[in-house]
Length: 198
Ligand code: GRF
Image (cartoon, rainbow, N blue to C red; front, top):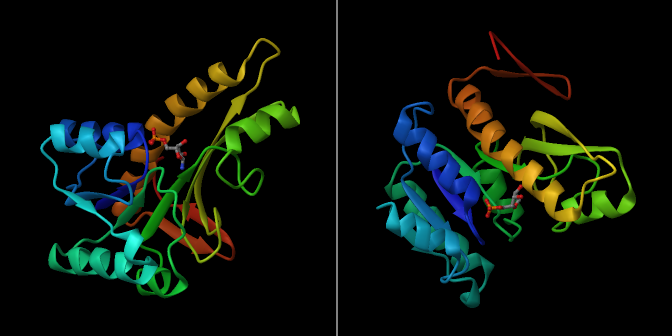
């Protein structure tokens, strides 16, 4: 798999640890980012992972061309988004249909967008959570693979909610990818179902 990120990379780190422990039988071919100084890229380098800077300053087409060439030359099967703050073009998504995965910090379709945790907290919902889904051409959209709920208590602050959400993310992502990579998900109508124990 290749991991794409723009920020601190805690999900990338959690996945790298699960790969190293053998819980997730996958190889991280490279970690790519649109931001050369992303903390997640520094962390990936310190883990000895290959990194790739996507030249978005030269335009989306050029950035995706660079990404595409690297994906092909490394024979990457899966593209795993972990806090990647760019929309991939419909052409790119079409080329890698059902092979791009994203994690989002809300129960989609509620609260898409870049401020999902804050939006859910400020809305006053009692339950929010985490969604892992296949990526289509729309933002935070596509077949849902897994969701896990997080209760918001009266004592919660935005910070405590963020902590709870990230802890769930670090657990849910590798488990979902494990099932996905093993080919256990099947599409039934709009629903992705899982075969065997989960
Ligand atoms: C996570 O909350 C993820 O759900 C969202 O972006 C955030 C990335 O966090 N898509 P990190 O960079 O993995 O720490």
